[in-house]
Amino acid sequence: KAGVTQTPRYLIKTRGQQVTLSCSPISGHRSVSWYQQTPGQGLQFLFEYFSETQRNKGNFPGRFSGRQFSNSRSEMNVSTLELGDSALYLCASSWTPNTGELFFGEGSRLTVL
Amino acid sequence: DAKTTQPPSMDCAEGRAANLPCNHSTISGNEYVYWYRQIHSQGPQYIIHGLKNNETNEMASLIITEDRKSSTLILPHATLRDTAVYYCIVRAILIKAAGNKLTFGGGTRVLVKP
Image (cartoon, rainbow over all chains, first blue to last red; front, side):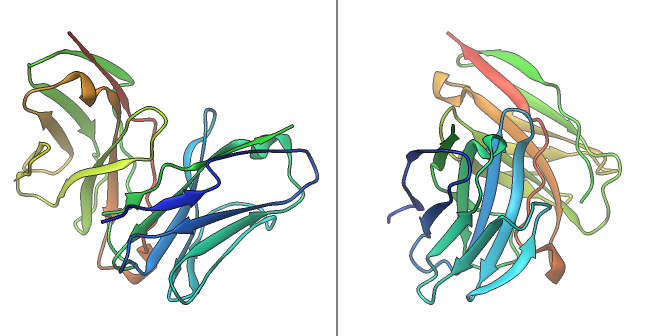
């Protein structure tokens, strides 16, 4: 059974650009969450989607957005990139939107120059 | 969600049991204790969770004190592959607003030595 797949794994952008990251959850999982991990702030919750609806949102500026498609795949977008957006972006999926047992992908490492 | 406190780091000898403590003195009655670990350059991995009874699975055992203010994750026979950062998380479930949000702290960096 395939795990959570995130693409791209690595990418480099410059300040002011935008980026879109993709996440394919485990087959059958309908809930997708996104997290940002940086050395200074650790792992922080970005947002969560279930049945194409955002159910929960962390404390991040509006430049960070996401969406979920009918096949449960999810994308997140960061616009007007800043140096501080350099991070590992992790996607996690689960069967339902109210469980603490999440399955994480290996992440997309974004470097902003 | 309640705050957790973990030691920043600990060493463990290969083949020995690793006991990882976690303090969650402000835990509420509807909050569970979850443990995750993150091996370098990988996403976090779910290990185990519990409410008040001790739990065991193929990866580890979770011991929760009777007053639920602290818990211990036990890796019974640590291997070099268990070297990772271990996160103790307290989370309310069965509350719709909780969703799947997990609040990660600093975790414990465990180094298993040969």
